[in-house]
Amino acid sequence: MQTRDSDFLVIGSGLAGLTAALRLSAHGKVLLACKRKADEGNTRYAQGGISCVMNSDDSLDEHVSDTLRAGGCLSEESAVRTIVGGGPAQIAELEKLGIQFAHRADKPEEYDLGREGGHSHRRVLHAGDVTGKALIEGLLAHAQADPNITLAENWLAIDVVTTGWIGLPGKNRCVGGYFLDKTSGEILAVRSPATVLATGGLGKVYLYTSNPDVATGDGVAMAWRAGLPVRDMELIQFHPTCLYHPDAKSFLISEAVRGEGGRLIDRRGHEFVYDFDERGALAPRDITARAIDSVMKKQGDPFVYLDISHRDADYLQTRFPTLYSTCLNFGFDMALAPVPVVPAAHYSCGGVIADVDGRTEMPGLYAIGEVASTGLHGANRLASNSLLEACVCAHRCAEAIAQAWKNNPVADIAIPRWEYGDAVSSEEAVLVEHNWNEVRSVMWDYVGIMRSDRRLQRARRRIHTIREEIRHYYKEYLVTSDLIELRNLAAVAELIVRSAQHRKESRGLHYNEDWPEMSATAKHTIIHDKPGGPLQS
Image (cartoon, rainbow, N blue to C red; front, side):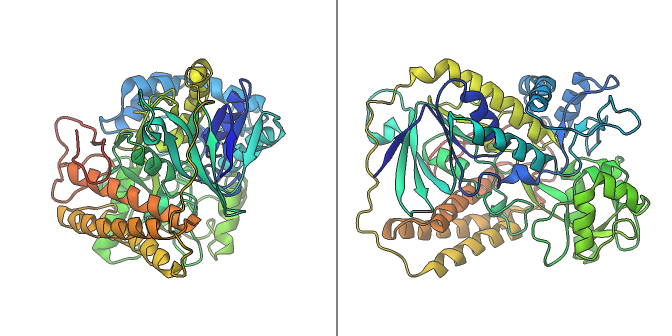
């Protein structure tokens, strides 16, 4: 087995991973590992933008207040203030790297700020409706040109390597990770004093999601297997408006459309969200998604409509060029008629417990971006705060690592060879595919927008059985990328179900019909055990 050494190991090449890698390259050699092509991930598909106070009519206090309000009393104010306060400096850094945000046509010296659900002001910087794509392409170009960054594409992380697992004395710490090189089929190890999990989201655990195929919760699953605590995994954000069309796989219609006057209506033309919240279509995502789900179930409709037809084609083509053209390709002209939409799994507000500097409780292991639970999002993420968090926390994480990485020496540690044992190649790939589909169907049917104790219990039993089957399969057969991702997906599913069972209330993104009220005291749900143990709170 090949073992490679690097000063810094960053797993994931989204906004958080690229930002951290570029900052760390000033201090040493960086190996940036990504499971597919480097530009593929949730960041690329982020349409809305980055929320940041950039207008004199706005304030940091108001951004903090909006974030705390959306978070259902579960956000941590100190983390919120740190991340929101760090936004302007990170916007300046991105602009130095060549990222161009839109400016107003009538006042070119001012940003063209968008407004999204839950925000009291226009504060969303954007690059048209392809902000994520602009960020990834810009930062990736710098990473590819950086002599201190080695980009390893098609490397799928299997597990992190810890001294406790190797059997070394002393405090358990991270010393690198195992990877499957999907191109060669070989398993290799990377030894590093600082490993950064920037693996992104887990939307593929649900049957319907806005996330790309890479979002299988790898970082959360690896951290849990390594013994790290994970928090608030039941808090899954369902984006209210994904395009409803059999061929429109995972196509999200940005919340910015509603910020520019888009209305949510049912088949009768009724703006139903006002029946649930006075803010209507600009209510936070948890309220909006539940409203849509409720109306669909009550009326027996497979979708509702998003209507921005009061805006002409010239405006829509200028403000939302990608959205407009994509909808047109599917037969929907946004300027002429409402567009059918449905909610879909979008973002995980929980994750590996980490501070705003990315530090976890394990020395040598850091977590940033969607994989981390920093205290920013609470029970519901405020729109466009995710890219803000990725930038700010990645920058702070790199600074923290620069001060600490030499305190975690790994040069003398021998990472054990990968043991294949009696494992053989499998000719039963259909079993992996079947379990993959069943996990996602169970999660959608029983652990979706609206939950109940009975549904969660059914999900718990079935996911437990599937995980037992996967454990057996993992031991008997040579690992493949599909098997690794299924293993992670099933682990994440169990974490979500267990956390949902523990929360005996409805708060933010978690709504249980058997516990419809919000408790007077806000508590996190924390799992700090290997699979199967008790919950802590």
